[in-house]
Length: 492
Image 1: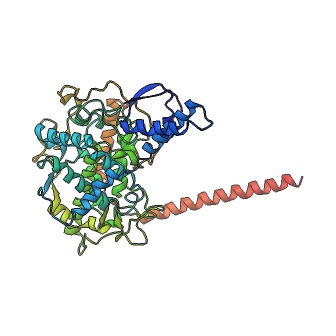
Image 2: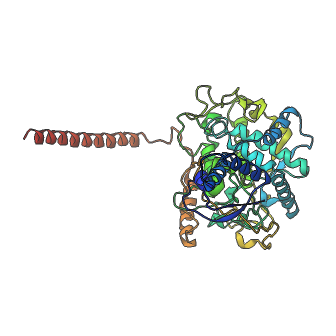
Image 3: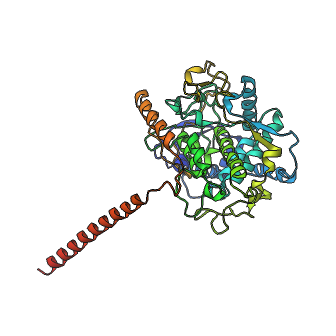
């Protein structure tokens, strides 16, 4: 059914957008019924008809914008509970997660076909809406890693119900950030993800609709305040620590380079668009490949804990009960229920059996190993790198031709991710500027390592205190001078 809106007033609700438009939008039949019932109820009210239509449209889109979970959504997760998901071995066997670019063309097509079917049947949206409800329950706290591990494992099982041969691949962006302009990676073409600075119109995920009834969009590396992708050095820095609480968010945790959630936030911010907003992000298929790599990093950290950190039980190593997350976060305690899965607790996301029974990982692509194929190569410094956009020879997909499209709306509502600041390579940075930035970064990466007590120079600390003391003294002198002068002026 086609419903005409004289003004795009819904944008006021969804995105704080103030400009009016005229356009035609496809809505489901249920929307027609709901809006027309609302208008009918207003017939006997002292209201101008067009105002009633506007108000009823507002109400419908406000509910849509709220990203509410439906009964059909809950059924997906209730079924997992009833089947004992997590407690019983998967019927499809263990999954092997690999970097996207190591998949064959057929394997990648199988993955994208599954995503398309999950989208067409509404299952992808159900997972998207559940994720939109956990910004306080599974972000900015200890639950971030275990909750998302279970969430991904469940999604992967839904993939396997469609095609048992597929596994959820990960996106290793450490081999993208090393190229001159990471946003020119072959991934941002119709061969993989589609557009990176527009609505997604090409590739296997073209014209998928997101959280607010608009086509999924991205705004990669948009400006100097953009964040960045994760590097191999970031991962090495994490392994300079040993406890779960060392790499996760607590009440007073600073936005440091050894906080895996903060590093994760940076990737969301770097991509921008729907991925840059918590409530919208899981509708974009990139979300799943991104989080699979975050889980890969966490698993490599757990392997480091087991091998190098003494008697640490990784199934019980968690944040202290009085410091499970930032102020305002809820239900992130070790024994709290894992939201969406009432038969599981947060601590269950720490089980070893997830990577022993449900899935495991192929190591990151590396020279001398899996850095092969059409879209990866080894440079003269033996680094595995991604090829750029010109490597994609595939014709632009026209699988989903749409006559009538909901226009892209630049949404600013919702909860933004906040990662570490980027390195300055924006989508507008020239190749020469990018080359200079990358050269400096590589020099810094070589020298960068976690600082130990032995590394610190006590004379520098004393010097710092002297400088602070001088500054405080000068500030106090100026303050006293101003107070005396003000007192004298008043007494004249």
